Image (tube, rainbow over all chains, first blue to last red; front, side, top):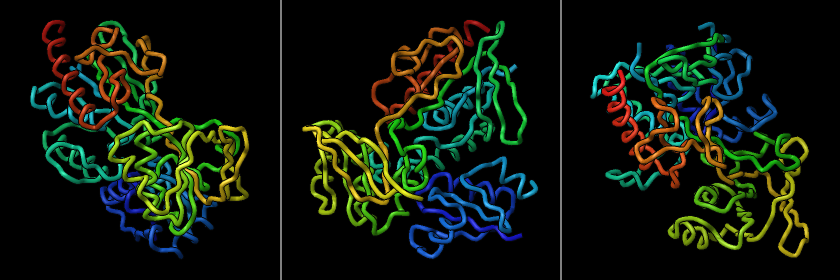
Length: 76
Length: 306
């Protein structure tokens, strides 16, 4: 399973989601859209919106720190 | 039966929890998220004893402090109803595993904070998260090199402008009033930022855009309508207390829970603290202190009544 999370360094919900993923031992790749313009474009294209966090789990997109959806998609 | 349920886990709730643990109360915290408005506060330079920190860091420290005292924090539980049922209180709502929950306790401390007020203007709903945001700290970094507008007249908009000035190419501050209500140190700072333009007595009319925001319209004092070409709009026009789910509690005209000096509400056994209450200044240090004051009156109440 490949998990990518698009974040900004100051976003509290990004931070909370990373803690959540760590608690559940889910490895993830973090893309900081504040500095990574390519990742920013990619995120906007995937979701049609600009709010962070965005999580891409094997192509399945979760917008926001939505515990219920994350649990479902991650099979937790 | 629990002695206490604390609803909310930001400054007031977490500060109270440390005292509750040290008083050996049988209690837990029920909360949607941990950190609340503290976590979205950006830079913090007025928490005593810490010259500089960030909202995320301070919220983490609050949580760690509670956990070091073995406080049970049930995250992902959104309270939808708090009500007196017989001799006890029931707290019920939705949890993130998809099921409902219901818990009971002898007392409840409501420390649920606030959420951002909306403009209620055309374009606002359509462009939410498509260039329009209520959290500069969260979403500001996405607008590097763009022109942006930030709307409001108090400390939050000043802090927003300061943060955005380091990210965006140009920052318009749209204030409907002829001056700012806020800390002078912030007002001075904003007025000296080269890429910040303050527009006073400007009533925002609508948010414009296509797929994403591309402008903001405002009306000036004379009634003329102007358009700002901006890729982002941030809204900082105040906050609404998260108080609607508490049955029978007395609120003021702003929907804040009426409390006395020690956090008592009109319902015996139901206490409230922090930004959700009538306390006039919404500050982390005040919320924390108020949480502790309420907790100590909860201890008094339990000693007398249970």
